[in-house]
Structure formats: structure tokens, C-alpha cells
Amino acid sequence: MLLTKLGRRVFAVGLAVGVSAFLTIGTTGTAFADTVIKIGVDLPVSGAETSQGLPTQHGAELAVEQANAKAPAGFKFELVELDDAVQGLHNPAQGAQNVRTFVADPVVLGILGPFNSSVAKAEIPVSNAAGIAQIAIATTNQTLTQGPDSVKIRSKPLNTFFRVCTTDDHQGSIGAKFARKLGYKSAFIIDDNEVYGKGIADIFETAFTADGGVVVGHEHITKGQQDFKALLTKAASQHPDLVYFGGVTASGGGLIRKQMADVGLGNVGFGGADGISDSEFITITGPASNSVFYTVAAPDISNLPSAKKFTDDYKNKFHEELGAYSANGYAAAQVLISAIEAAIKANGGAVPSRADVVNYVQQSKVSTPIGIVGFDANGDTTNGIISSYQIKNQTKTFIGQGTVTTK
Image 1: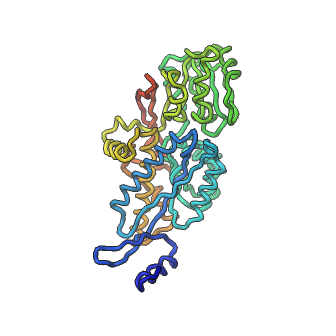
Image 2: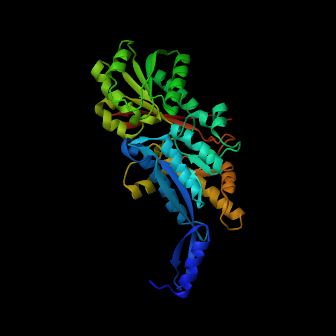
Image 3: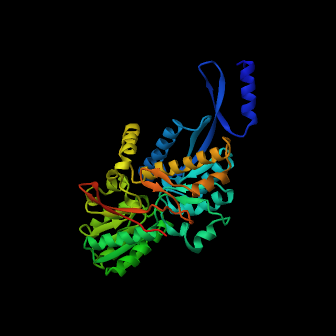
């Protein structure tokens, strides 16, 4: 195909600059280019974790679509979406590789995700070394940002990791209080021995005991385990009135609840945290899901008037119910886009550096469907909210929520 003189000039410029561009023809016939700023998205969106990851990703997609409708003149945002699930399960090594892919592309100015804390632990050294802002959506383990462990996983003293969800030191404690309020007196705890699962199970155990409950056992499962009857038989011998699971549906939460009936625990309560908040849990457990309780480190947006437009826009675009973290995905994208736009303005309308974006993320005070999002010195949200749910008639039912006090 032959290029016009103008076309050859535009093509040559496109090869010379370090950013990608959309070529658009205006009404006058003049050619101009919109500079594309890419945002990496790392979430588990295949296999057993699709029902958690995909609705979260959809939230980010909606935010970018709406931002592009009013983006700074000459700029467009584009998502680069990578899956961190391997054979249907979130995979820390894959997550780290995805971040390396984002870092290698100079047009990527920030990263959204991941969903799982074990994946975040593998990714933070990579994103931190590159000095690129990473805003997590549902990674709740507190050691990612607090205490000596958080310092060890960063390659540089400067923090570049932020999250729009609150942490498990709050979620686990509130979950224990919820369990006691529901009348549970003794608990057998099972966790999947991952960063998130073991972490929240440990916190639940401490808080449940401190609140007068009795923990009659605490066991770990192995990755890929499918048959839990021997473990549940051991639990049944301790006669608990609650089995609490620390982990996600895909790592065993759904199967454990389903198999409880096989060992005489069908009428014993079952609870967990946001790892079992996905629709897949109900699909796997069916009627056994009824009366199950769980917590989510996000507000219930069906009760927030400020989130109505987002809810309507989401359902109109995707024709599906929101996931537990769809609004968080939207909010994280909003925050990152706002920081990039502020950095563009401060840079005189030119593409900013990754360091500039990190600086503006840290200063964020952004109005989102989940409230005003800002971050403390650790990168944790200053808008911490925990919501509590029970499943009734195989449908999640919102019970209540509380605001987490942050320093």
C-alpha cells in the first residue's frame, strides 16, 4: 500500500517516539495522533477464579471507558489485561511475570491488581524495583504493607504499592465478632496455608478466643487438595458448632462446605472472609451455602446512594450482577487515572514519569463509588470498610458494615 506524503511523515514520527498512538482523521481531513497511556491489569480471570476476577476487571474497564470520554486533550487510556491464573488458580510466579511484562513496556505508567495477597507478595519486589505505581484491589493481608515483612519484600525504601481495600487484621477481627454475634461458641479452623488464607485464619482465631469463643482445632490443607473427608472427620470429633475457612473458594472453600455433610457436619455452621464471597461458592455448594456467613473488605454499594450511577452503568454495560470487588476495581482505576492526569498537568501537558505518577497516587483524595479514597504512609486506604453477609436461599444477604479506624 502506498503512503501519502503526510502519511509517511506521521508513520515516521510514530516510529520515533516512545509512546503508542491512535491515528485519527478529523473533519477537515487533518491527521493527528492521540498519545496512548497504558495501564496494566493483573487479575485471575480464568478457571475457578473467573467469578471473582472478571467482575473486578470489568469495574476497571468501565472506569477507563468513562475516563476516555473526558481525557486530557491528546491522550487516551488503554488497559493491558493479563491473567495471573495458571490451570484455573491464582499463581504468584505468573503474577510476577505479568508485572515484568508491564514494566518492560515504557508506555505502562501504572498497574491495577492483583486480587490475591500471595500474588501481591511476589509482585511487589518487581513493581517496587521499577518504581511503578501498583494499586491493589482486594489483597487484604496486612503484612504486605505493615511491619518488617513489608520492608523485606520491597526492593527500594520508597513505597509504590497501594490498595483500596482495608486489611485482614481488621477483617479477621470483625469476622470473629460477627461469628460470636451469630451465637457460635466453638470453632474448628481450616486454612489453605497461603499468605491470605493462613493470615486471616490466624487473626480470626485470636479474636474469636479473645471474645470468649473456643477454638477446638486449626488445620492447614495442601494446594490442589480435593478430598477433605479425613480432615472433616477429625473436625467432627471435636464437636464444633462452626467451621471457619481461611482461603478462597478455588483453594478448597466450596468443596469443604459441600463435603461437611458427608461426615455429619451438615448442620454445623460455616464461615469465612471475602475469599468465599464469589458466586462460584454458591454454585459449588448449592443448598449447603445457606446460613454461611462471610465478610468483605469493601462497602456494600447497594446501600450507597453515591454508587447508584456506577451500579447502573455497570449493569447496562456488562449485563451481569456486580462482583464483591467490581466497585473496588473501578475505584482503583479512578485513582490511578486521576494521578496520571494530575502528573500530565504538572508536566506541562507532556507524558509524565512513573515516579511522578507514584507521587500523585500517594497524594490521592478521589471521590469513588466506595467513598473518598486516600492512602496512609504505608499505602493502605484511609477509607476502610468491612461488610458482613449471610447466604439465604442461595443468595447473599447484606447484614451490616463498619468503618475501620486508621491512624
